[in-house]
Amino acid sequence: MPDAADLDWRGTQLEVPSTLLSPHRHPMANRERGSVFGSILGIVLCGIAGGFAAWMLVAAFGVDGVVGAILAAVIGMVVATALWAGGSSLLRALGWIR
Image (tube, rainbow, N blue to C red):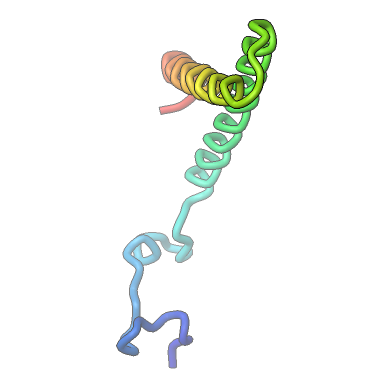
């Protein structure tokens, strides 16, 4: 008898195709888990760098209040996106990631 978690709303057995492909029935291989962890780490690092750059620029221009917060958010997102795109392109060019 299958567990209740393995049944859909009608009571029929659920089958997940990704678990059928793996010999150990793991939905995600270790290499893919490492890739997800690396992406999360990269996103966090780019976000921190973008936030710091935005804070420094807004503080240097002396903008504060709501306008400063909105400006810092926009600058931070642009810098973080540029760092993410540049970093991933560099790592692909070096052959470190696919």
